[in-house]
Length: 345
Picture 1 (cartoon, rainbow, N blue to C red):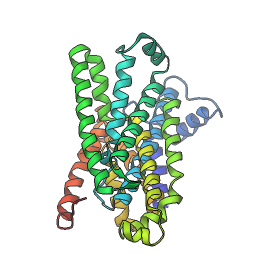
Picture 2: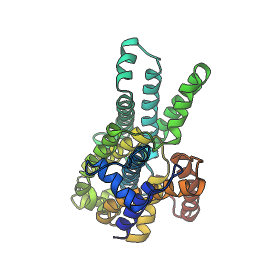
Picture 3: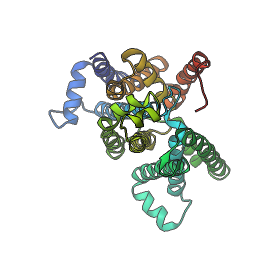
């Protein structure tokens, strides 16, 4: 109830306040009604501004929920509160796919491919981002599987190695573009900072569609992840199909993170911070933790976005940068507090 009320208040504030002006409650009701096809719009540029804020709010809710859910699933399967969606290279893989799409749209590629990409650039970038994320997940899963069994430590190390390789590829593409076309280089670098602006219906459908599909796995793994807390061997002895649970959990986490990155770029640490705070608040049961991560992630990202708009005004601090400023010190705090308990993954 607390999170739901907080989400409603933050969503209202996100619509009402901004650098281009504020809206009263009556104006909000009228403008949202006009957007839904009920009544007259606000007139002039006010209706356009409200629609842009509405899209930004809807994207922030979906992206925050997806990243937090991905982090909660990964922390549950790895049995380690320091895990995050970036561990498997999902975010970097999605960014590499998006960067390749941006280069194609900019004219670097066969003429027929470029022509087709230009007709639906947002969808093409999102599709390539999905492809990069899922291809990365498949590669890491193949490297971490032997004899039909998934080794969590091997999977984790494979994710770190693949993440490093993809990071080098991403920097290489940025360096190439910078020496040839500064505008393209700016677009590539901008993707790594994250963005909640300029999203139409297609990209909103991408993040919410991916999030909905990820939620399908929750009732299939929530109880099993609680049993996993005692160790994989104990879970297997209690009748848990460990391979199935791992595949479902990793697939759900990959889809959720890919949906967020495909639309908003890289927003780090949200998947680390939110599930950890929820464990302190509501306990470790995944039957509570996973659904609440959806609401808490949306609340966290909306609060950060609205806070920076109110405090910084016209200065637009990208969400990826903002989350790094918040999440970096939090990660160091967790690391220092847990250093006596840390073991090799």
